[in-house]
Image (cartoon, rainbow over all chains, first blue to last red):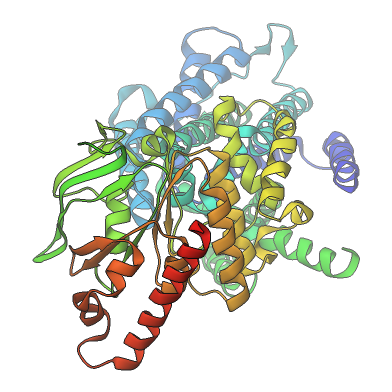
Length: 308
Length: 273
């Protein structure tokens, strides 16, 4: 029940936040939070570190951006298609990578995402180094004007809530039970008759599709799809967000994304702009050395000790 | 005459680089038996297990289950066919509850294991059966505990309950009493006896006392090959077995084995009488 109260409070905060903070910043935060949650489904609940999730974020972004500029369909459809294409790419990449484990899995996903990066760099429709600029936001369902930042924010919030709900449901489903069993003891799961690679593959596909959903939405928010989103830096950043927030906790990646995105936003404008990567690197090292379970994980431990 | 074999291997070989771990093994496991696989360290017992369940691929040879060739089947498929194994180190899911451990095994047959859009509450109808299975190994009161908090012996009991949930025709137990205190050994041995009714068990076991108590038939492996086969009395009186285990001069240990053999024979006679 405590958890439900917590969610209600968070939801109320999210609903009133745009009256106090810049809605585009909040929308960006939600996009990255969704991206990190999708990534965490693999790392936290299957135990596989993908180092290529930027490919799915970027693919969603480019597909949605291209559709909005060239096809005249409504934004919700463009986002849906961006998500589906990312999911399909995830299904393909998952087939190739889930047979590997640990560092090999990370390397295969990295290599595949680099492939995607160079395709988008060369392909004419992406605008190469310049990216896709001036993507129109359009009218939601043909009715609601998304060029209004407040409307955009609430649309993004709805998408985020859907994504978060889906991940929550996946983790607490019969499928999620098998995933946990695989994470806990893979040979045993096999010996109970589960084809573990099939389960990893489905999880990877869901994770990729949701990363694509985050990328599609992000493109609408910024009206821009660029190589930044497919670059391996992005794959690294999402690892950082998840670790800072707490791997394997459902709310951790949201907190981690919040911390990292806020830092980037406020630091990059100021005096410290040039040092941002050093500062983030430092945080990463401190987290790995001292707070292995991240902000949410550590908080849960303290909570358990004192009130559990 | 062809006896009723649940499991049979024909000229099974596993060679690693320059080293033959399993060498031309012809193993026959009779239906309804508790069959023990013994042998000194490094004799290839666990390798045989890994071959039987396809966690390793044989270099050559055949594996037959109920007369049909399962040599090229995948591990998970073999489990679904009815050959379920345990592991040397207790194979549980430590951060799931005791009940969930058993439920994972029951869940597969429900056919909803890929349903990521449904609540796990649909699994609650399996709870009664899971508790029943836990009860059969004396763990019902721990159903809601985190598995990681159980004692070692109880983890092994849980593993057996989980394996039973699949209703396997053939259970492969890899050193079920390894690393256990004296009392736990007795409990697990009784448990194996109890669950062996109506199924076949093939076990690797170091504890000869347990073997003498449980096994209908024993196969002794040495350096990857079968040294001898038979019931406990036959095997334990074979000088080659003693040599394999103890080298040449180990009279003390021999005496102990002889005593146990005598005791086993006595027990058998008791039962038969």
